[in-house]
Image (cartoon, rainbow, N blue to C red):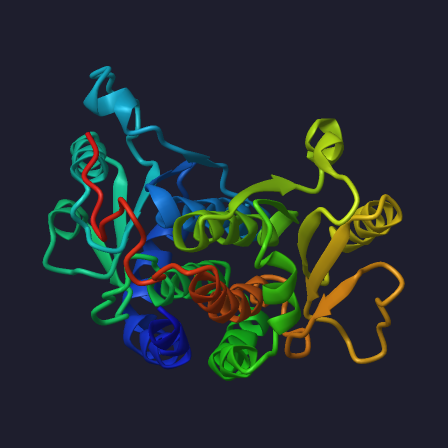
Length: 343
């Protein structure tokens, strides 16, 4: 798992080069005939990437983006009016039949269908009009790492090209090197804090929320540590009651409009006695020791959309080692397989 996560910077660098022409062609079509709605279809870690797609497409491209429940089509047999919509399916293997069937149905209804997939010779790839290769190569560990990061990188590149955002495209070119730096960050304090815990919360907002969802999943599947992800906007509506002295609270933040509220949450949680572990790609002059119990180091801030990728890259190394420290095998978690078949 850790070895594959460390391959992500090279994967993203090559992916951006390889997919530039394809994404430019797709973007031109969408600019000529803008979709009134985008819909994502995904499961597991890929569904967390789909949440990221919602944030970037809505905030940067102004396209309303919703997440599909494949069972609406596969089990309830309900066809949705998707003509001229943008339908994005995301999968590592491309083998989930419900995702592929729903994408195929959307294409028949006249939707513009796009598959972000690592296996380009797959059922899902064959169902799509446009196939965006993740280019991550074989991923043997059950827990996805480089494929998840590759998906987020491809979604950022797609959005930057679609919106003709030159500034974001330039920052994106710096992302592989920043990911390499994130791989060297020492999160051993997080490992120590979490090693004997049974429960934790992972909190983020905006572009960071899909990262929190992914981190919570990895804590469950690789380290058998029950963790739940919440938006910082929702934490005070109920999950706040779980917080007690020494309760581990991971806060993932980025330098954008969500930061003040996230720092306020950190301050409140620390005052209650929680162990607040804050990951924030900050500017050098920013001092955060008063709002967090532990500051998890990251490279300097790159861009609010890119910085969550730095957090999950550093997290992947830590969680693989936490799994081992808790006596588990992060490459082959109990009761799980690489490809999950749903219908």
